[in-house]
Image 1 (cartoon, rainbow, N blue to C red):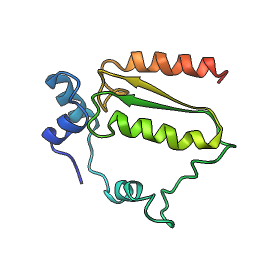
Image 2 (cartoon, one colour):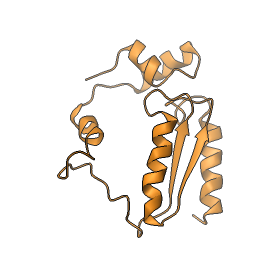
Image 3 (cartoon, one colour):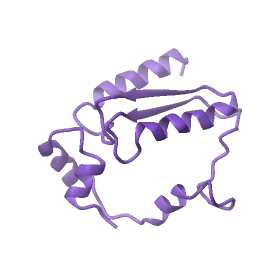
Image 4 (cartoon, one colour):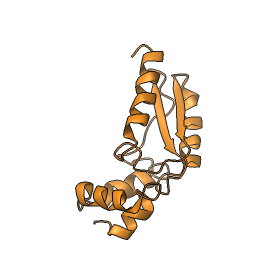
Length: 127
């Protein structure tokens, strides 16, 4: 399955100018199987899902979840809920929200800002 240019704009490029969204669409979109997306979406409903995750694993490494405040694909509310799930493990789990960013936050022209925040987080955690 593949997204149309309009679907990409809504789901990934909504927080950036149209020309930049079109450029990212041309550069990054490729057809891909839909099965992994559906497995991930329904992982909590199926005990045998290959995408099921042990969120209570205290032995895992630190986890930083990033969120775009204008993300239509994974809304920031979902990212905040995910952080709450992972915090049950006792391992370091934090959220960094970028209020004016969409789902393309790590590949669009503002990626440097995201990278700087992530690098700072890594340094703060001696990683």
